[in-house]
Image (cartoon, rainbow, N blue to C red; front, side):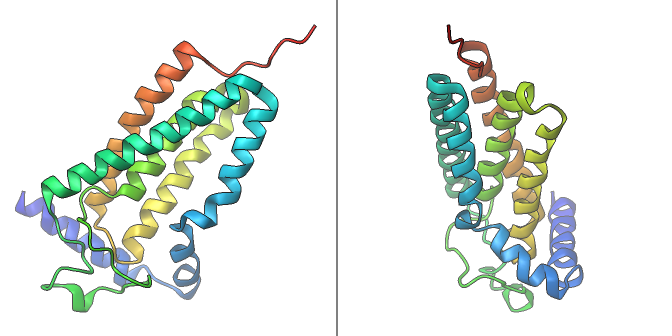
Length: 191
């Protein structure tokens, strides 16, 4: 376990201190902000509702439900584990590049950002793949960029992101699988 945590710490500092540049310093703090992604969420909501009517409404409900499950589960695990964030750890905080206005006071493991976005990515992948085909994998790119940004800005370790991603993928598999079995997006037949 100590070797794994040491590897995690080394990878954190490699991303947070060495893999940096002016462009990423500007872009990545924005990528982790919910308001930055609000237009995507709005577009998805309007597009789904317009094209799939009542099934679209249920898609939105499951999308929000997936978010709630991942967020609450991650919060529970954070309290249970009690791992300090890198920007809060008195042993290393002075060496951490914190690229956000404040360092959150909640625990570090698991990352709620990673859990939420990987959960939404998996749900969207499963429920929208029949409609958008090979482009559905972009949901995971979106989640991975947000997870990477969390390490880059100094608020999470890589293992926090991995744990959050696994938690989110499991929740997304459950909600997306249930949605696909019971509701599924299909164009309404008009006569």
